[in-house]
Length: 240
Ligand code: IPE
Ligand code: IPE
Ligand code: MG
Image 1: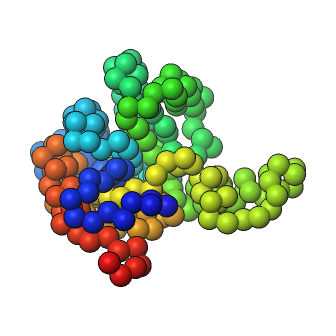
Image 2 (image 1 turned 90 degrees about the vertical axis):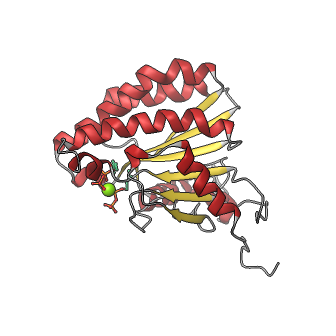
């Protein structure tokens, strides 16, 4: 839980983004959905480069949800290929620039090569501290919560955990263990829902919904969302 009371003027330390609208972007151009996803990766690249310059230190991007398995196998394969291509092409550069990469989500159901890519990205950047890039991939908040409960039960059964469950012990078993909660969650494409993203961590996040489709997202939209965030008063249940 963030100790920073936030409020006007303060910069969000951790921004999380539900990158939505790739399919509609492609459909509007008469292109296959894959082209929308491809263009979406370009928006990711630009954002990862620009976010650090804005002073944000943690960026979490929702790339593939546990519910996205309901899409065609062709589309699912495209999204997995794009993660692989992104890491292959950008890992060196990100590692050199002090970016620490974490992949949030379940490893169950992922192929061996995707698992290897995730391990490579995380281990290669584990010592970096300049900027934190988290990619939620095969991520669903309900699944994450269930996995955390299972971890607590298993550790309690083996004696590794004393069984005293509190918020801190629980949060430490989530994929985001050690990371600050998101201050701001942005969703693009005009949809106004959370779609199973960061349900625990986002308990007090400010939500900003933008009408732009993800492939058209630029650093200017990020600045716009930050300005909206900065105009709000975070109260965390208290009375300022
Ligand atoms: C977001 O774009 C990318 C993922 C969910 C993987 P969509 O593919 O959901 O695009 P729309 O919502 O159909 O336009
Ligand atoms: C949320 O977008 C998941 C990602 C951005 C990866 P969806 O497009 O899958 O969400 P719904 O289906 O509109 O709720
Ligand atoms: Mg969508």
